[in-house]
Length: 389
Ligand code: HEM
Image (cartoon, rainbow, N blue to C red; front, side, top):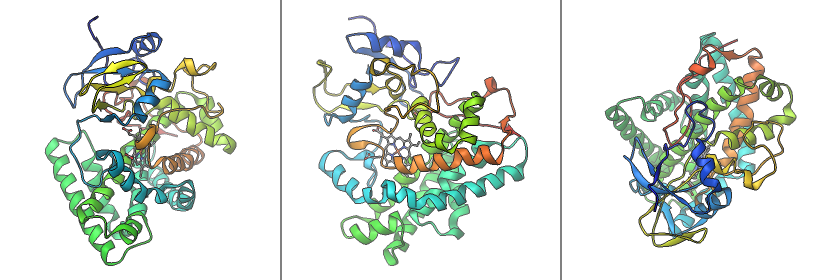
């Protein structure tokens, strides 16, 4: 067997972090699946089978013989910690709160949150960092609505969340803030146990409170906070950075509301913020008739699959906000497919046109080539996005 290639964990090209490295395209053409070495800042280097074709990535994500990467400790209440019937049971308790209809009902609340974040940007003036003032507060405040965090608690909630999820903070600060978040969630659960509110957590307490422990309920809250936070914040920031590089497409998003839905879908496809969705074989399995042994790691690349030229006769390497919706795997596939995808779409559909309408002359305050991207993080993003107008 040939030596495994080394592929960066995100598989993103250094000179253009929105694009996959050439090796990912090469492996799409090969008949045999590639075994690779993945240097991971978080997990250390590990060997894995790399999967890059659209159909293969779909098959892997749907395969019940593959489990979550094995890198994550078990967390009660966190859907990503569960498999099989236990996962289905817990997921069913939550799906009614994440339908397209629910996302539509949340729209006015999202519009209000977006408007207040835009006010904060305007107040800060030119040079304002959109990561700090726009992309991060929006998902935090939306989660507050979802979980029923009272207005008076929101500032503290937002501050703790920002620190707990800020990977530039020391491990100690992050751990301390994460423990504070869990303590706050436990308090919130206790309040909902006494008087269940009209929001996701309140509804779960009312309908399934007798089947779930307090720890599981707090875990559900924490999962929604984390799953719905980094992903949206990073997708918003990178969408803005990408559109600033394509002014003609930015203008279409700003001036033509009929483009909004296809633009959001195209940005999701193109950016693929959750770049890889690592799995581990729970037993011996086959992918494209090739054997993968129990315990082996499998790394499906969403970034590569979303541009798999084998599936379309279009140029999927270019960004085209007017492209009729193209299939993509940005929200995963199969049993763990993103629960919050309709909500995510709604946040993006409201936030992006509102930003460009409020600041029609928006542009980066630093040369676009100087922006620092999170290419090695599991969720791709940009560290800071100072803008002017
Ligand atoms: C652009 C934003 C988002 C992206 C790109 C995204 C992406 C994903 C992906 C790829 C998965 C599957 C993970 C895997 O199979 O390993 C996932 C799962 C999940 N997401 Fe999202 N997500 C986003 C926003 C949200 C939001 C807003 C929420 C809720 C508030 C949310 C809640 C969840 C939950 C609960 C799961 C686990 C589902 C399960 O295991 O059954 N996500 N997300």
